[in-house]
Image (cartoon, one colour):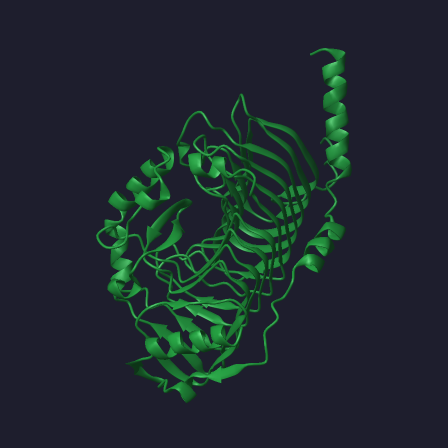
Length: 449
């Protein structure tokens, strides 16, 4: 190595070392520019339109009428009072509407796939397609909200759950279309392809609020924030244990605040994504960025995940003051592979309390050992003030490639009380560790006898 190369490396190392403190000012900037939606004074109670909360009557027409009245009045609040309201089909938002589900109220969707046709433009595991409508769907809307202390039930545990074993043909076809740049108009799925819809999807929307509601029994991902910005999700809770029940999936999303959320779902709690493979890389101008996750209770498969669909890139993610309730497979999980490309950078995680996990911190550029030709850049990742009681596999895992190393990883004040394996770090560069204890803390050395 020449002197100038060594000097450059040292300068980069020092620069990163100086910038590993949690950037609270950046968090404040993001939160301050996120706009909460504002609604006109118009209100409509769905029971005034004939809705029946008897868990049997199909209220689809009533909810459609309420949304149409709001559109006529340039927005407003749809009030769902106490009761169980069956809806055989999706709710499609218009702008400037707050769907307020009051305490004791439940919206219970049907599980008949035909109710979610005709198809709408959506995304499925990182690829744009036409598919069944999400149960609650907003496309190109502004100033929208779902609030209240009520429940949304997706009835995902029977018919929709049975789709999982039949989805491979549709899933593989969608990925082929992605890789071959098939025009969107020809990417039609729906009936016969068994790709389950999301529970709630905001697509190309801005100024969004989801607050205090409870999400149960989703067919697929629970809350999908797709190509949207200026988003606040707070105070919501989950009871959703079907296949692929990710809690919150920001994808190509910008300026997002997720706080005070109580997770209890069967997959990732928060999974930050940014498109898959060729299509994702073509959208590199719109990475997922400026995402704040704080004061949450994790429970499910993984706590916070970035990837694996992240081909447009993920940057500027700030996670703090979160803890687990019970077991997680992995606490913080950054995953990509050589099919993805893109980047993961400027990730800051601090003040995380984990109980029992399989792996505490896991960073891999070789997820599932798949792919070739499009290795991802992973750099500038900082972990600090993290505790964990028990790790059944590895405390810290870092997996890069020999020709594409993971760079600039800072681990500061990490304490793992027990782990089967402490650290596995391969193909990483400039990994800085300070106050890292895995297992029993060492004391002063014993004297020779």
